[in-house]
Length: 442
Image 1 (cartoon, helix red, strand yellow):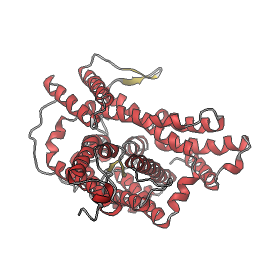
Image 2 (cartoon, one colour; image 1 turned 180 degrees about the horizontal axis):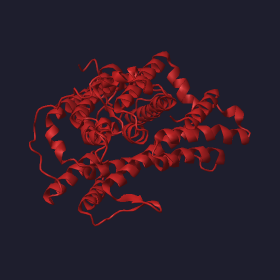
Image 3 (cartoon, one colour; image 1 turned 60 degrees about the vertical axis):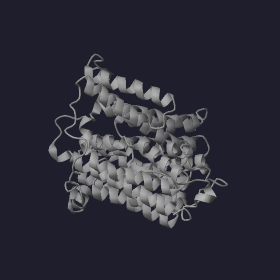
Image 4 (cartoon, one colour; image 1 turned 30 degrees about the horizontal axis):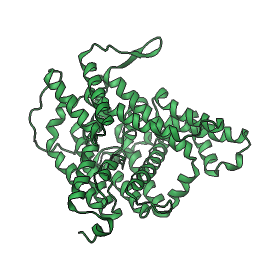
């Protein structure tokens, strides 16, 4: 085992790898609660049962897909990276595809399945790099920041801090509401933990918020600590029913598939480079075994869609594990083992309400928006598409629309700036694809 993972060459040992893998799990464990609440749209009342996924099945799908992805990342790519259903992509899945467009969740899973297969094909053929390189860095950064704003907005809504207003669309909520005050407490606690540099600050913030809710009797205590693993039957293989439904084959669904594909591209490329740089793996601006790492992600997403969850991606929280000493794929195996063990603690999720998860969404949004500092805002031809990409996502409640608007305006501003030749031909293809997408959304 030591020889396979090159412990001596990388200056590590079992203790460091186990601690690193456990740290990564704790830093990203919040997704076990956030993902089921998001995909089942728990904060949306009066939703037709046909549009609401089974909570227990999504929890199991989340844990299993995270474990599978982390195992493949560890054994094949040999990187200390944890994988799980991605924040932002799950919000797009639930709030845009299901809630806004009214598409069945089976169709959304099918879109994840198709986009993941495309991802795998593009990775194996090497075309993935060409596609990513065709998109300007500023738009990639804007997409990440826009998703951050979007999930933060969702967090503010689900906590009651921001509410609907007929005249101004949104306004401040009732901050004297006990549940809203609990969410605000969670935000403050999580901010303090993150400011103090606590590696799993988001996770521990949720734990402390849930405990406070129990003490104040705002949350009912769990029926048990350990329990039977919920059935995955309600969601397992459900995606395949979409392929026999004529309503699945629409222009809108093409846009959904492309959005899953693009965002997964950007998310993984950025996370891989960030964590690999931190661990010292990047040599001459190149990442060894990058193809294998991306293959792990695509296979995990394919399996995740079959189980019943949104796109699986590499987690930047893996940097916490690297900081704790993780340097090899053995740490990822430890992370995977923790996700499998978590299956038996499903009863504890009874304590996790939207008011408990809202602080996690808001703080993760803060982290995602930090990429804005890398955009050259002094160049108007860059600033316009980047800003439109970012701001349109929360305002239209759609990640896909944000990407479409930004990708349409980029060629326009560059052409009239006299820089048409600097625009990659693929961006012109995107221009027409997204024009059609916006013109014929259904």
